[in-house]
Amino acid sequence: MLDLLITNATLPDGRTGMSVAVQDGRIAEVTPGLAAPAHETLDAQGLLLAPHFVDPHFHMDATLSYGQPRVNQSGTLLEGIALWGELKPLLTADALIERALAYCDWAVAKGLLAIRSHVDTSDPSLLAVDALLEVKRQVAPYIDLQLVAFPQDGVLRSPGGVDNLTRALDKGVDVVGGIPHFERTMADGAASVKLLCELAAERGKLVDMHCDESDDPLSRHIETLAAETLRLGLQGRVTGSHCTSMHSMDNYYVSKLLPLIAESGVSVVSNPLINITLQGRHDSYPKRRGMTRVPELLAAGVNVAFGHDCVMDPWYGMGSGDMLEVAHMGLHVAQMTGQAGIHQCFEAVTTRAARVMHLDGYGLEAGCDASFVLLQARDPVEAIRLRATRLKVFRKGRLLAETPAATAALHLPGRGDRTRWMLGEH
Ligand code: FE2
Image (cartoon, rainbow, N blue to C red; front, side, top):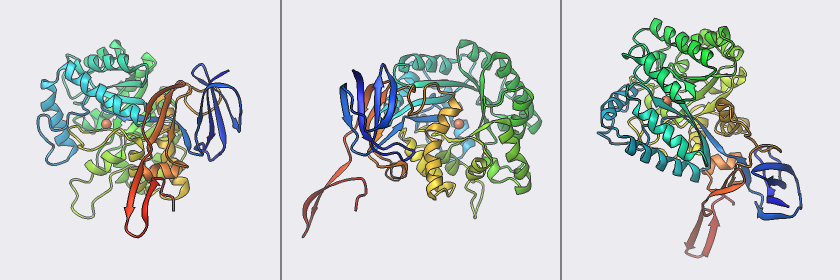
């Protein structure tokens, strides 16, 4: 007797009429039209069943702090960093934990069950580190929360930066972070990449650095990150986040850079909502988009994923934990409006993001965790177009969240009353 049998599901790869059998929290079988006894059966009615959403780049220590102590007036990255600096002395562990847990509630409701969050290690008290380690413990039954030791003020630029970051790793933070473009000089930035990659290699940790979050075409720390990855044998274990300077780089240089990134197995995480908002702020017109070269990276064989980065914090006053909104913005900014491009954007917030995080048991195949989302959409294209309702969210076979289908009751003169199920049906 199965624990759960889902029938008549459409999968992201286009297969229809699929049954997904669940036993002991794992997917036992994925096959068309299976009829088997189960404690619980769910007819998907032809809708899309997708593996849960994954956010490979977030800042949970800052989330839901919008307006504290004031709002970012210029809308720039640098005012955001300054504002975060004003907020840090006012932070308490309790308030930080409360905000983070509230965000995790939103995340689960949106089918977002794995998050890689950077946590600022610049404060020697490591208050935010301790708070997010506590959040990680509390949400473990329903969210995979992976933490990155992130030296927001620069690991070399801020006093005690290396010591603080190392102590955060000692406390159990999972990934080594960095911010080379925020160090004092290009040389210091390159030195920070080298130092942090060596630290990760010594400790067997993954690496995820904020890399070249700038409009400066000469900010080329991604090159050093790829080269250090190769030198230290860290292929497949390193991520460069943002990489917005690549938007402004010389095309000839990029033609040499892309194969290097591909060779190094470095993943790139773009954050479309934030990159389109924070970059290009010093331009008049035309204004640069300031997002990295997503289609070109994908074509070169690089794993590219999309992150949310910020929700209602010193850098960004919008957002709701909806990775379909992130994918929606990504496909617009990168002009990935062809069918293949839209599917790649869906992968950027599911399978490709899971690869960044090295998630075990992720996917919709026999043997994977039964962690998936039933969407009010018939395929990934419709899911992104509608930012589709998450009808049901399961983790390891257990129902975590339900949201009623979006419908509209219409009262139209001459046409009577009718209900539209908001799939965009004609
Ligand atoms: Fe970030």
